[in-house]
Image (cartoon, rainbow, N blue to C red):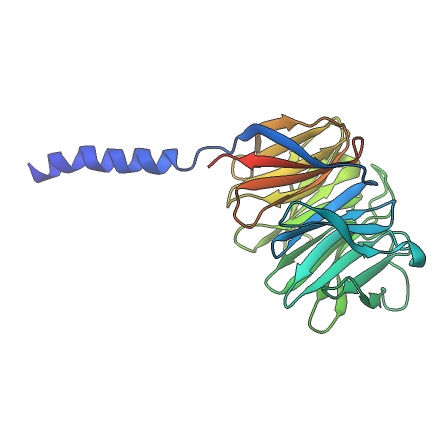
Length: 288
């Protein structure tokens, strides 16, 4: 008798567990919070403030917690063009600089502390960064080609400032993120319109997660342990990808066609998106 009474309870618990893993859905609450930018890219949170690159304007912008736009760093005097950004404790900003092929290190005041190169040589065109377990991984594309796969991924130790090659043979590697359990790297191969999964232990072990035709997968960000959010340059959309089923679960159309990147707020209530036709920064409420 006790067992029979237990079955409905067990069924209810399983049902609730299944419902809690529903696919990610974009809200329609999209707001343009600032414009007049110059090819915005690489958004990252530094505490409560949002930093982002103006690639062609050669400055790094800051959207403050109080809702004000100002300049974190003006790089025009050095001819530095920033792209992907990464913030590390206790208060350093690392920057992919694609004009001269450098990695830049800033302090919290916006002062350049270090200019790093590739063992005395320039990188090709550093693009995007991600931080995991105290290490920074960044992409360095070269040829935009479907047949010439000469892009690389490097690993940077912020403590020692040592940079090592992780792997090569990628078709214009762009956005990058470490998977939920820290076993895999997810990288956008823009020239092939696809997202590829690489093993961190053996980066030569690779598989295609999903193909997204009609444009280039650009910046990516994990929302939870199964949902990857993708900015799609050229198609004007944000996509959510279920990495378990390898399927697109939802999409959101932006006002412009060149969506470059995205970042989730620390409280996970908002998604910030950069777009370069409108040269604007957008804020999207995330459904609970």
